[in-house]
Amino acid sequence: MGRVKLPVMPPVKPMLAKSVKDMPAGGVLYEPKWDGFRCIVFRDGDEVELGSRNERPLTRYFPDIVDAVKQALPTRCVVDGEIVIAQNGRLDFEALQMRLHPAESRVRKLAQETPAEFVAFDLLALGDDDLTSTPFEQRRTKLEASLNPTDAVHLTPATQDEATAKKWFADFEGAGLDGVIVKPLDLAYRQDERVMFKVKHERTADCVLAGFRWHKSGPIVGSLLLGLYDDDGALRHVGVAASFPMARRKELVEELAPLRDNAETKHPWYDEKGWGPGGATSRWNAGKDLSFEPLRPELVVEVAYDYMEGARFRHTAQFRRWRNDRDPKSCTFDQLERPLVYAIADVLAAG
Image (cartoon, rainbow, N blue to C red; front, side):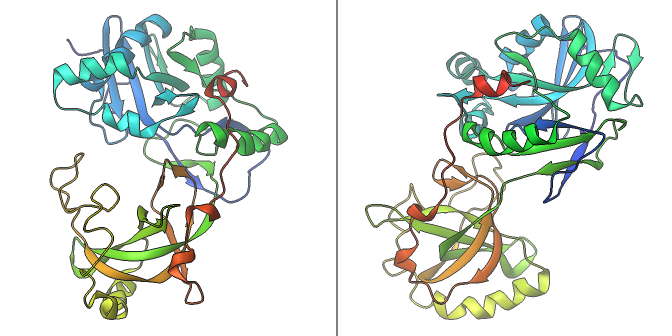
């Protein structure tokens, strides 16, 4: 494959959003926040490159997207969007992660078994025109006019009505979406800057503290390992909490020291390999150590999270406080709020 020749050339660092609690209003466009792989598509005739947020090409992992955008996007363009996989009407991020496989044969097989889709939401270049300095409102209009939607390539829904956006925020979570993105209409495309806004769900859960990982910089706490009890009384690993100042990480080593005594004896995750965090390296990052220091599961921690992906927190949870008043055995999945199911097809039809 040859290299594309376009007015905006790869690599491009995507424009980013900063989290806000309240929905901004006035002079903005609201869009659903898709939970997939951010991807900037560079198309120059039959040459297509798929850029990612970390600037590493996604092209080899998604041959189905390469083929699909040739049917839906203008002959020469640069389009910002999200690669997603929908399973049973919901976004499936785990299935998307499985597509990042080193073996070419496996990549082709997965493209057939779990095909991906591309959701377009910004236009950076069209033909010979660099649109990055053009106001977003005009870029959106050009994107609407130039995109030919297919079963695999979609234009993200958008609205200027705040009430509609708030309804989307409540309803679309049931399809696996991540919240709402808010874009000022006069915004130029500013690479790697947090100049958009994102409104995400936040909930709290009381979890059992069952271990921790050391920080990469030295003998201080890197992340707390969290668990919840299932209906069979087994402690399931549900994620981590990791946002602490460095001074606090040092303090945690001493605070948690008593729970390390005899922690390996009958620790629930030493036998349940499928539920614990494991002691091997990460399948996505061979250099990442996933080993952990076990703690006796006697302490409860309240954390904030956005939503669940299967039986795990989709993103890193945020520490809120210790709950010394809670019995660890009372920390079950029953406390978690489950959004109503909402089909991806209905989300895409909302625009």
